[in-house]
Length: 88
Image (cartoon, rainbow, N blue to C red; front, side):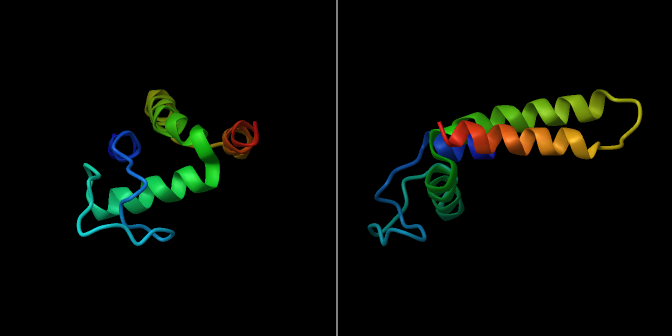
């Protein structure tokens, strides 16, 4: 939820690793949200807006399972989904 709020309230003029910004931050999560949203948008682009929903799906599937084991193929599939969607 915090990731989604940070992305929705992203302002390019906030202080982050690649911008000095103004006096304060206008991000709803604060300075951490400004850095998080700037980093996500810089690294994966607009696919970053899908990440909170993907995290929610992963959490829902994880807690719905009877066994709490995570398969390597599922993790690899989610990572490939993020990488391939960000390259579009």
